[in-house]
Length: 621
Image (cartoon, rainbow, N blue to C red; front, side, top):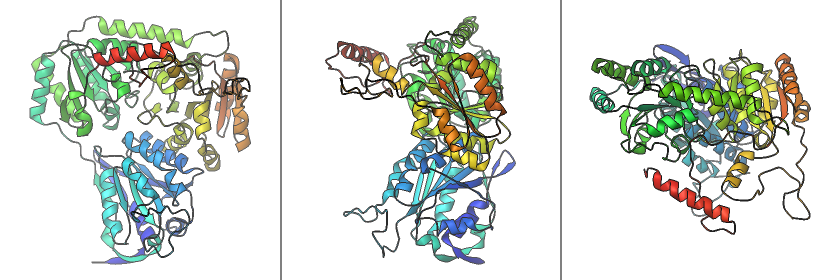
């Protein structure tokens, strides 16, 4: 067998540079680049290999380990999982900073390769700087924290182990049913050790993404059930987008007169003006979706995780004879909600079901309900978009100005946490494909700014906007600096409402008095954070980094700021002073939270009683 002598790190870089995927006959280079921060645990091993000019991987210098990993997440999500990045850190705190991002990747089914440095395999210099020691098991390191949030985890303790680890890692990273974080821990001594690697391991490798076809028997079973139903309703998840099944969904809904609602990951796959698109589903959904879903006698989930926001904690579907079919490549997801599980690719499954139901002459029993629900919601969005508030700019008014007047229809919107994902899922009108980029499986504060750079790397010719609250901005915005360094312009729209108002609303909505969710000075009289709001100038923060920054307190200043942002040739932030508590809420939805059953506040106990009543109405599994 022909071999080539090289270090573990050099072999890893060569291997990654030669990975390709084939999707429906199209061959795509799979690994685009590496985001990293160097420390003693990776700079002289993997760093030496990356410094070489013997590969085509672009290296991005991160400023925070979690932030740089969000770049990789934003990139692969925008690429619909057809390209990835790797991320590398030193050992200890650098590695642990990436654990949150690994959880974000796995919960969102996004493929990202994590390469944390590791303590010495030889143990000769132990305890090395930043090493954690466990007296009961010396094999445990900080990197074991990646295990619960990774779909594949390995530690390369010997040079020859790299080959099996890399192949298994690629197996997971290219499998639509298993995608998530892959973590390969790299002991810092092993990174530099040499080994005679077989050339066939280092050569170009093409991974063929295989669509899982639907079993013909399952087509018949599903069709038999659908034929018995008058009012089916579709929950369209992210799997439809990743499967490129938008056209099939449009044909299916039109052919059989079936409305659908969108999950966060599924929103924007079909544009908002489609007459069967009822908008967001569940807790952060629209009245159109939630009213129709509540009365549906069949829920057809396609490519959705059916999480608690989507199903309103299993309360959303109230028809006594409701049945569910769940089409998913992942059996874990297909089995949820006691559904009829169909393990299949969304595109192939929809094609097969369309053909079978057409042959049987199926049509739903809907008459005017679909159009009426849609018209009612459109009227509500128009109202929200034009709200006037005596204290300043309401959050929904800001979204209306941006969506209908100020931003181009192909602008990509990135957000992740707080009230903005709720508002965007309800009211944002997607007029072109690929414009809605929301991470909400993990609801990870700090994703927005950093992932926006990943989106910009994925789509350099389009304008990318991160829209986020002041809480998320303060949580993590490190890669704004990287965007300036790379000359990749991103646009930050910060809605400054003086704190974490989404959780503030939840707190007060459950009868608890306002407590520690707003950004206020400590009040000497109360001993609590009940003083005046903190006067933070976020526009100045952006200018301090070398970008542009503007402030808006009214509609006119908002328009001026957005115009200046669009005219800018570098990353820009607009700080919009927003009236607290002016986000959307309600719309025939409920969400289970663990409210205290005993409290000195009567309103809290009343909220607990209301939770108990809804739990009785919800499905148990």
